[in-house]
Length: 256
Ligand SMILES: Nc1ncnc2c1ncn2[C@@H]1O[C@H](COP(=O)(O)OP(=O)(O)OP(=O)(O)O)[C@@H](O)[C@H]1O
Ligand SMILES: [Mg+2]
Image 1 (cartoon, helix red, strand yellow):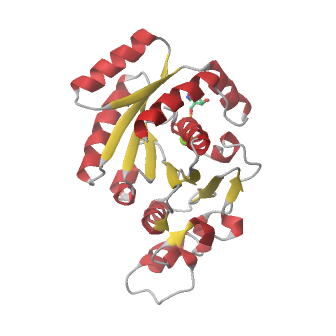
Image 2 (cartoon, rainbow, N blue to C red):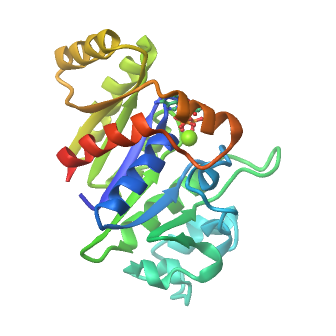
Image 3 (cartoon, rainbow, N blue to C red):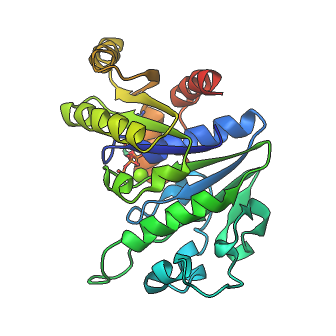
């Protein structure tokens, strides 16, 4: 349970749950590294209470065009920290990590321009970084994945030991969760669970649980619709939600 990926349908609440997990784990005494692996959405650093984003790891390898060459087997030995076999958190250069109260954030890369080409190099960089990331005893990494299932195709989960699938109350979200559960198993992830998010009533949460149960998918817990989380998201403020914080506590009790 060292490297956890949070995935799910677009808008289901992945980033919010990453922020809740990060502070919940911190409270339990872990040092947390959050990895922003979403190449589109800009705001995870705000949810986590940082003033700015770190420079993207993509710049550390010299940009998108250099990623595949940097990690290819024929590449020349290099001084680049990202090509080391093991990368402890303390080896990440200062500009590429922001840290506060035992929570660190790194960002793989963001799409900046039109016509800049596909985001596959960022997927490859996420995979290679996670593979090499060396975590000490009390350290955990939580990865905020991009929406949908393309990251499974890019093999990012091959470097992950646990997958949390966020399910919101919608048919599509349930359908996607089933697909993700299968894909995670196929790539050999040991632990896969779903977290229900944004259910407006206990009745809806039960309905979702029941549907997932029938599909043979484990539910580790649920976070109901929390107006405080919604408000933080609306205002672009650090994520706060007392209901969400309590629920994530119960989820962590099981997860850890
Ligand atoms: N439990 C909750 N209660 C109320 N609002 C929530 C809850 N979880 C998330 N939200 C809101 O839902 C919206 C989407 O959340 P978030 O950005 O975390 O989703 P996401 O899955 O990361 O989205 P994306 O796919 O775009 O990355 C935000 O406005 C957020 O504030
Ligand atoms: Mg997000």
